Length: 356
Image (cartoon, rainbow, N blue to C red):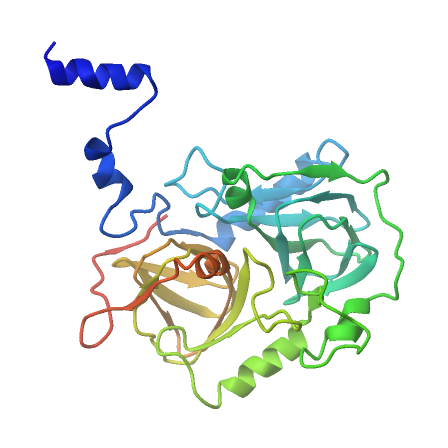
């Protein structure tokens, strides 16, 4: 063994590393994420979700009936991306998903059904299709379904990020359900207009005090904006905001609602920060790093960090996408960066089509 080999062996024994041997991995010229673009189809998901309803009764040992999306590039991690968990939660009529709280932040976007609720720290939020409901970190929350039909919604959480930060806490509530301590939909009455708040209310944390963003005013705002200007990269895209700050809903999670107008194709760009997209209405396609993903209502797809992406509607109709992003983390840490596709027409060549 020569002197250099002996030296490196000695470093290993002392739990040391020579930076000159690993600097290319530590400091790449640009991000090299392990998560890959991927798409899960509604036609495949729905039978599995329903089968889960037959096989997995809710109990204290199994408090949530959720099918989580695991990115094929991250087989040893629970996440749709390296920072975001996404799953479809299924609640049958008259069921209750027991109350608990945890340090990861969570959002719920309702895909199917009408009449379930989430109670957050005593505030009962009635949920209908297209509503966005928040459960900020360390708030007690339980779900119930008072309707006669099953409910399906998208769960989005910062679970992988919080786990990587080694800051995960969890606590069960003493009973299955909390006591409702306020008038139903209390946060909607206080903050639902977005630009007004009660004079006696003060911001008490970095999370939105509005817990239920209803679909009707969301769609109205989206369609009002569609008559004017739009983003060349995302078309008519709007971010749900914290009415206290005008910023993102959570320090770790942003949510968008996005209209891709009839016959429109956006220009490609990329940015630090990953995103999970749910197709709420319509059909279309996205090109992500040269791969075309054809999607329709109910499908879910992932755009990893620093991946070129563009979207288009199909069949002469519009499409609506809901999405969850980790960009607030990147922005808070000064790591957010965005780049337009350099080609003159702003579109990527398609080298392959996703088959699943």
